Image (cartoon, rainbow, N blue to C red; front, side):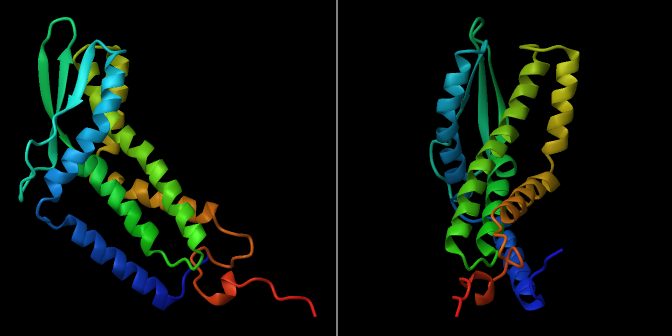
Length: 211
């Protein structure tokens, strides 16, 4: 398996560890600001999905951005026929913030001299992470609706609960972004490169002209 040299690998590992630790620190205003942005971005999709569901779905963003806010955003489910309303806390930190920041930390910290390749990794990864975090969000919603009897039977409920428990863990919120990042590193690797993270001029230099 191709590897970085020891010094570059050590610097990369140190940078990743420091940035991950920084993202776990309680930074003022970030929780409510992220929760508000997430809710406003997701609500149009939930509104469209609600037309095909017996239950209306929407997030309620925080009314004010507090210095020490909460990472949970209320997910409101309203039955169209009875008007019954149920609200459950939705953890945007575990299901969106951590996976996205983990991917960006690895993608931006990995030493690539080719800027176009790094851009492909970052842009492609963000698109894939958008799909993954949507799946992270959809599973708890679908599980809640299945348990409430809105759709599916016992087998559907069991399958959704199992999938939610498997994905909604601290380990998976870090493992999946890292796997996506590494898959893109390998997928964008040029046949001429000796190592996927090569930073030396020899790896990215054009072939020498024939005499």
